Structure formats: structure tokens, C-alpha cells
Length: 125
Image: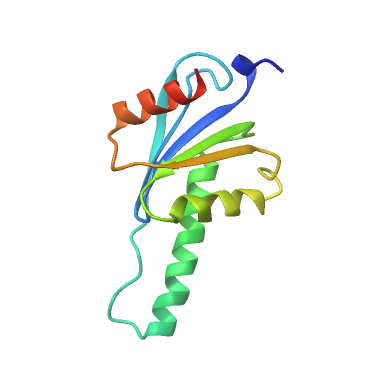
């Protein structure tokens, strides 16, 4: 399979927000923003155990919503702040549909839509 026919995606994320980019025609064309996903986080007035459980549940839901926007991944590059990228890559590797995807990661400051497209385009070209 040539590099241009692979289903390539990029994600900028932090623990509360993600920007998902992919090729316009799934496996060819320029990169475009496919969507945004928000993670509201748990309420702060709960006890610690309930808050932690809720946070884990919301994070899993956040990851599933991101993955839903990227069918049949061949390659993905995840960038962002903190350690959430590593958790998302682990989530993908433990999900049968995505376990064979080639994943890479980097760290970057907050990016806007256009910056994500430029960053991901440069990564794959």
C-alpha cells in the first residue's frame, strides 16, 4: 500500500478537548479538520472515589468519540499537552479495530484548526 493510500489521521488533544484531522477523501487529498470533541470532566463536589470513577468513565467516552471520527486507521499521529496522548494510544492498541494502527506521538502547545492541519500535513509529507 503506498503512503498516499493509507488512512492517515492526526489528533491534537489535551485532557478536555481534541481536534481530529484526516484526509479529505479518507485515503487521499489534503488534510482537513474532521471534528472536535469535548470532555467536560467530572463534577468537583463529589467524593474523591466517585470523582475518580467518573473521570475514568468520561475519559473513555472522550476516547471513543475521537476514535469514532476515524474509521479504519492505518496511521495516526497524536500530539498535545500532558500525558493524555499516551493514554489515547494505549486505548487504541487495546481496541480490536485500531490495534494494528501505526501510532506516533509528540508534545505540542495548544494548536488551532489551521495549525493542526499544517502540523499533520508536514508530519506525513
